[in-house]
Amino acid sequence: MRGSYVIGRIKGIDIEINVSWLLIFALMTVMLATGYFPQSYPDWGPALWWLLGALAALLLFGSVLLHELSHSLVSISLGLPVKRITLFIFGGVAQIEGEPDEPLKELKIALAGPAMSIVLGLVFLLLAGILAAAGTPEYVSVLLGYLGTINLMLAIFNLVPAFPLDGGRVLRSILWYFKGDMQGATRIAASAGAAFGYSLIFLGIFLLLGGNLVNGIWMAFIGWFIAQAAQSSYQQMMLTDIFTKIPVREFMTTQVVVVDYFISVQDLVDNYIYKHKYAFFPVRQQNEITGIVSLNNVRNVAQADWSQTTVGRIATPLQENLVVSADETVAAVMNQLFANGVGRVLVMQGPQLLGLVSRTDVLNYMRIHGQLNKAG
Image (cartoon, rainbow, N blue to C red; front, side, top):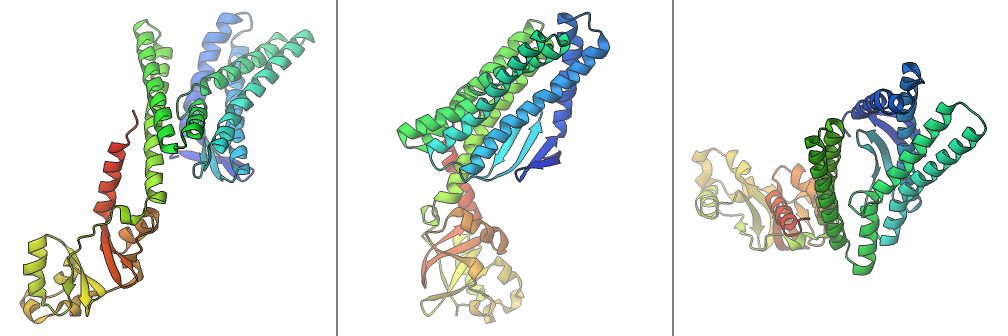
């Protein structure tokens, strides 16, 4: 995440703090030190209010870190590596590399975080009760009790069945198990996430109209984040699906115009480039594809020499980065498309030309696929 800095490493996982975390840390400290503690415990005084406000904010984000670390450790144990955990304005996020390949793994990973929050909540509340009974200063048990309550509220909020919240992932795993369709399950869970996000936005607007400025803005902000995250998470999953599962044969162009190596460059320009409006053609020699010719090749020849120069003399010989098989996925060909200098690859089976794929083909397929499978 941009603007994030690594502060440590746990079990091979980088722990990052985003600069936006500083904003929410300061905001929470101010709200607790000027609102909650003075109103509930006016006799403590400003110094203690500010100290407890900062401690509460710091320990709360420590709890969020443990929440995300629980997700991460379960994920790693199930064979899904985790690169980093980032603490930012909305809490924390674990960057899990890849999606679970079965619903039970998804369920275990999703439940790990709320389970940790529930454990932390109960432990903090239990400690608060024990220390209060032991006669420790009131502010100690109050701080622990506050953290216990917030952790339980965090667990409840995260279990709302709205993707990408943990509850939304639980919902997706259940739907995936019974429907056998991860895409369909993700679409339903993401739609629930978007609906929940917009509901929070409307609630935030209602609070604003009622004069509750801070809570209204914060509620609307969280709602907007959840709605956007739900939609982008689904779109990201669809792109991953395209890149890793859909073979090239699904969207390659099969009607390919081929030119013979012996025709002149003038013939190529007049009867192929202008006629078909293409900038790229496979070159054939004795029924075998031996190379490609493009506008770039033509530009390297003086126009006065076009009629005396054959396509075979200017063609780029067939190279590995210009050829893919029909069974390869988008992920396998994207590097070639963007790095071979022509933005196109030939789809071949041995010496046989099956089709052609361009960057435009990939982008159009992704656009159409996304519109047909849009969440919401």
